[in-house]
Length: 86
Image (tube, rainbow, N blue to C red):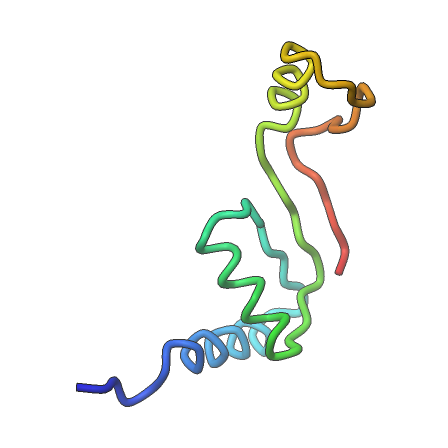
């Protein structure tokens, strides 16, 4: 049995509800499936996000690259949370 509404349409409706309810929308983006689906929905339907915060273990990752001998610029990641403005 086919659902009455496509999942993509439900995502779009919810994104529009959030946009209308708040003056400032921030997405905390981890790169996982959930945050990727949210970002994709906003971009696909041209719904404005005011800010995107990306977070992860950037300093720990940089240390691992150094331990493995990769030639990378030190300080590439300086904080655990990175801020991007769309």
